[in-house]
Length: 162
Image (cartoon, rainbow, N blue to C red; front, top):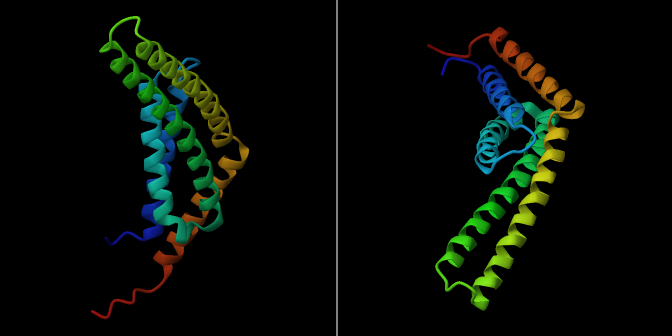
């Protein structure tokens, strides 16, 4: 509690950014749903930290939040489509083979898989932007701003009347 908010926020942002970037680099050419879901969780954690410090972080923080939101949206769409396809297939497997219902549900599951493929492509684009110059510049500005605000807070005299 005695640590300045900006300093604690800076440390939390650095940690969340480092973990998200590391997890993203570990994902190869063919990502599986579990890897992308874990990346989505890391993105959520970074977003939560950014949203808490946004009043102190200002425009660099808002810019970084936009990148994380785009990443989360693509990953969420991918996750939703893969879960939907799996549930449809599970339901189809309980139906009589060769029935019209089973065929229709197989078709719906295939559509969800195509939707997941498009979402994965969207994730790749969002990841490229998140790891690109603009997002890196926003992160660097944010961390510098938080460091500056933390140093200013530490240099200010204490207003504690005790």
